[in-house]
Each structure stands twice: as structure tokens, then as C-alpha cells.
Length: 380
Image (cartoon, rainbow, N blue to C red; front, side):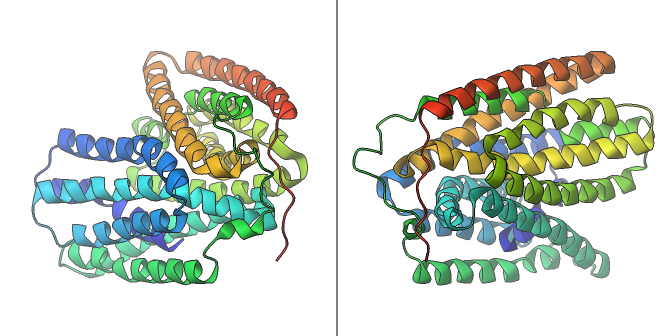
């Protein structure tokens, strides 16, 4: 929550900040695109390295430290190339920490239910993601000193976040204590087919998932809402994200992987609602989009821990992020191209893709029935 406060606060003004330093639209796109690519691609390296070294706390703390240092420094730089490097560095920090952090969560949430645990994590993320940009906007509104004070203020929650991490590592140096140790020979050299089938489902369903950028474009270009109202819709979508994460996490602990079938259904509904001519239906579509994001960021990740042996989880989370990133990129490109051609064709195509995703999910459940890594919990 605290680090989301920091980096979402910073990301909310990255475009205007780079433009203030002389960047063109192409440079802004290049810098932010390179950052997102780094955040996903480098996990393919950091995940296996975290598994190999078993230093999950070190990777997690290092990644968070890079982020909470890079964002406040953005407010101090007056040079475009340095600001661009810091924007990319913040995303690199996310790549460094994410597989190790998700592995730590997978251990700790074994004691409370992984669906519930990952859901609470996502809901707290969204609290930070809403409060951070609002705090930055507030500081910018009451000061005339540019971006320095607004971004510098973010150092406070950043320092507190690192302090909490160090405190947690001292109290629980090995979070694997929350799980019963695996039997000898459980940690296979290869990831099971159930994981790859599940990753395939994720790639397919995200290929038919529109981006909020396209939703906001439709809202403004069709004059359904003024541009100033779009951030309010986004905040509402993030609220739906948090609620859906908590609800789907609770259901996952009771119903299992059947819960994630809600994601293709929501994804199919989004274009029908969001890309019409009604303001209220478009807002409902944005809320459905936010609910889908909540399932993606919580329950989808929780299920990965059930499919792979503990000693391969960081590797699995790194690979899973890469697959999800490719699906997200393909989804953004596909829905954008189809939107320009025909909105009805877009809606039909997305529905067809989500039907395929449901079929792949069914297949992944069959693989899962053959081999599933669920361990009894060691209660503390």
C-alpha cells in the first residue's frame, strides 16, 4: 500500500513532468513503454535468480528500495535524460521484486487462504494507488514550486515502507514456516503442465481484454464525459478493482479455480457496455473493467502457488508475468485496431476470444486434477 502510494503518485504526473523537461509525445511514449517492457521482461531473469539464491527478502527489499528512491528523485532532476532513466529505473525495481514478493506472499497466505491473502494485498494496493495521485494533485494545487515538493513528499511513505520490510524480515526471516515442508523429490526440474495450461488461459483471456486507455479515449472522443471527469471514473474503477479482488479471493478459497471463470465473462461484457453511446453504460463498462483488473491482480496470481512446487514459485511467477504481459500487449493492440474498424466487430471478436479462454481454463483444470501442489498448512 505504501509503495503504491509512492509509485502511482509519481506515475500520475510522469507525462506532464517529461513534457515540462522538453519531451515530445514520442519520447514520453518511448520512455514509458521501455519502463513497462522492463517491468515485465526482466522478471524472466529475476524469478529464476530468486529461486536459485533463495534470498527472497533481499530481492524484495532491493526492488522496493529502487522504486522508493527513484520517484522522489524525479522531482529533483531538471534534465530530461535523467528523468527518463529514473522512470525506467522505477519499473526495473518492480521487475526485481515482484517474483520474490509473490513467493513470500504465497508462503504467508497459506495460513489464511491464498485467495483471501492475495485479495487483501490487491485491495491495499488500490488504496495506495488512489491516495498517492490524490496527494500529489493536492500538493501541486497548493504550491507553485513545480513537481519537486509533490514528488519529494512521496519519500516519507517510501522510507516507512522500507522500515516495515526490514522489520518483517527480522521477525519472519523464512516465511516458508507457514507451510509444511515438501516431501523429498517434490521440487521437480520442470514446471508442471497444469501451470503452462493455466498460463495459456491467462494469455488468451487477456488478449481479449481492453485497456482503460481505450475506454477513456471513447469517453472523451464521443463526448460522453469531459476529460476532467475521466480520473474520477478511473478512481471508481479502482474501487471496483479492490471490491472484486476481495470477493473473488474469498470465493477462490471456497470454490477453487472455478472462480477465475468470472474474468472471461467480465472481459466479454466490457466492450458491450463501455463502447456504446450511453454515458451510464460506459461508466458501468469501466466498473466491469476495474472488477476484471481486481481478479487479474489477485486471484489469478493466487492460483499459481497451487500449481507449482514451492522451490519453483519465483520462476513460475516471473514466467507468468511475462505471459500475462504478452497477452496484455496483444489485447491492447487488437482491441484498438478493431475499435477503429467496427465496434460491433470488436464486441463479437472479444466474446469469441473469451469463449476460447473458458475452454482453455477447462483444459487447465483437467491437468490440475492430475497433478496439484497443495500442501497442508503449518499453523503458527
